[in-house]
Image (tube, rainbow over all chains, first blue to last red; front, side, top):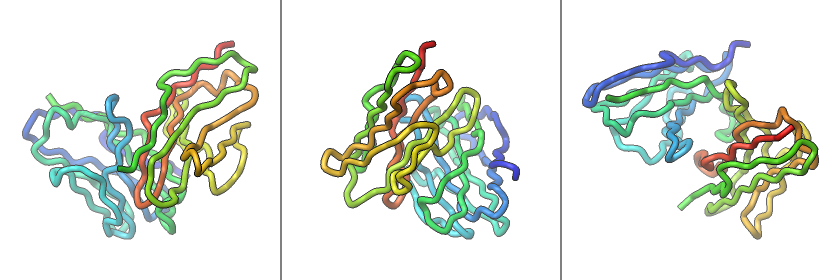
Length: 114
Length: 106
């Protein structure tokens, strides 16, 4: 089985721009979660989607949003980028029957905001 | 506030020595506890979860609800255990610790 894929792998944006990141889960997985990883804060939960519905959301401003499509692929969007949004964004998929099911992580998208 | 704390950022042990990676959590209710591991140039992956009560790659973790701890242990460290280890708690969402980088010295 192919693993979780994330595109693009690297991205450079400037302040004020917006960005869309994509995640393709493992085939058959219905849950997709997003995380922000920074050296200072570590891994922080952004949101989780299951069957196209947001099941949980972390403590991030409304500039961070996401969605999930009928094929379970997910996108996250960050609008009005700030320097502090520079981070590695990780996506994880799971079967989804239980939110605490084993998560399988993608390689991440490295976002740099200049 | 929900929180997972890993007090050691870096930990070095000699090959064959016992290793313990500490994890403490502050969580209302009864969270599920996990250890995730990231080997060099690999993805983050699940190592073990407390409800399984299993030993993976020689590692075990005991949940101590009184001390709200979930320390990861291995009696004899191997060089291939060198990696970044993250403790995580799940109640209604995942909370991760900041990680401990383990180096096993040959």
